[in-house]
Image (tube, rainbow, N blue to C red; front, side, top):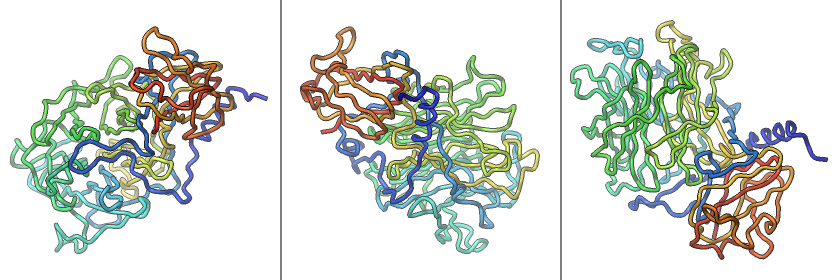
Length: 498
């Protein structure tokens, strides 16, 4: 007996949200060969991965985009403010898993009382009352964190502290860190961007760039990018190019800009990538943004801040070539604030790093605030300071396509590398895959829907074969499009492997 569409969607949503933790292995999502700037083929011997995002399709019939909300595990928050130098809580930061030593590394901002000369108003909050510092924590599993006793700064005032960067300022904010394995100079292996509001030299106001051999001892490069606070640094590991997602205001709206560099020294002039449009209202602001690659597709998380509710949430965004970015159809909120009184009831702010693959699940670490954005004016709740939390999604199951009844969709054309085809999908009926020619060419012979051996079930990686063809070797070097057909199918991605 076939299930109803409502029951099917409910069932597949529960399946996609399942998070198996037992015996989870730690695996890097994307790797780059040191000193080359170019990654090896995707994990698992894949020659090509295809993510079924709205921007990667050419046709759809009885089909719509499917988005999976990120799941918040019960362990949250995984790190809270405990030290006397963390009076401001565990705020903006980057969690990465080192490709060198395998450790989870967390670079975060906090502050403690220490009045400096003067003060300025930033986003309706008086800054200059505290010392703003960057701290470092590490973990073997990403769940239990430790603060190494580094004593690099303020050792007399706070013995055994984990502070790694201090710079006298009215305000330091959103330290964003990458481990750059394409860097040939070992003294520049780690790179950091941090907003700085200087008390004496206005030419230093903006997003300052630093380098480090170990992520602990930092050197200012002298480069400051023109921007306001809430910024994020990202490196495309496939090319080695650096991208700086910056904030400025268009009118009274916080909006997003982008600058890029091939050497971390010379940067392009910032250009707008996100400004409020006709679908937004006067209270819509884009607070911050991060980027990452998934199945060879460039995605990101966009922080939307609503002045009318003083809360923030996270949307999924997409880019075909890094410079042109788009919000998704229906603008789904994949990570929302928690209920009143929760650790993130005031806002779920984007983490300034990529999701990390752990077993068959991705973890996305984010900055959680129990207070609304106007807490600086209203006093907030000192018992619930900002903390580190994370949310999860199943491997490559963040965005996909859902057919309704008998539906189908086809991808943009790409050059076939040959090899075996695998599909990531959920379906209680049957799924078939045909291989189409570009344009008006129709299906390739022997790769039609009738030739495909249908599959069913819930699979992260199910092989697709045809009656007379078990691989795509016959189409190697040709431009092809994948066409997925079936009743009530949720399909997320495909992989072609040797």
